[in-house]
Image 1 (spheres, helix red, strand yellow):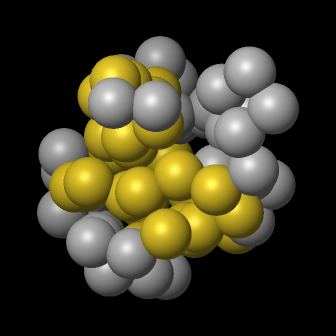
Image 2: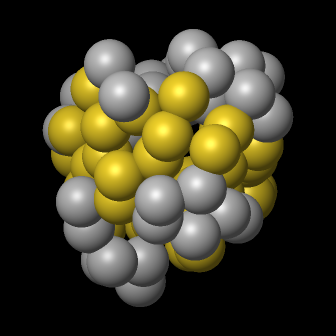
Length: 74
């Protein structure tokens, strides 16, 4: 399953990927926080949409558009 940058509301179109909370190749459980984003000066933890193995596709520290694929859980 693709992991995408979620919409945060307030018309925000781009967010900063602050950090990955688990390393690539790690097993994750549905709902487990896997990365953080920053939007409008608030930091939000985002949980895994499904359980599986996380394959990270991008590095933290860059801006990404809402809806952009940043990882895959297989």
